[in-house]
Image 1 (cartoon, rainbow, N blue to C red):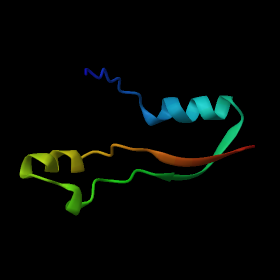
Image 2: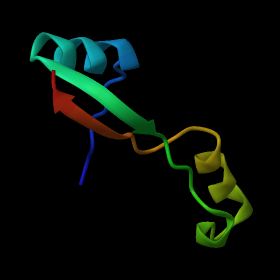
Image 3: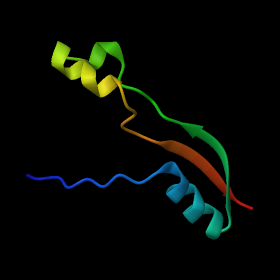
Length: 59
């Protein structure tokens, strides 16, 4: 299986939400917890957030 990834700045996501009439109420970027790391090589995944959780509501 091959995954192709594209980097998009946070501004792109927020601009799309704003254009659609949403107001962001909360934003979280949960990291990978220590207990989920199986090897030292896996620690590299703690350097950047893998998920973006946000709550938005129609303005």
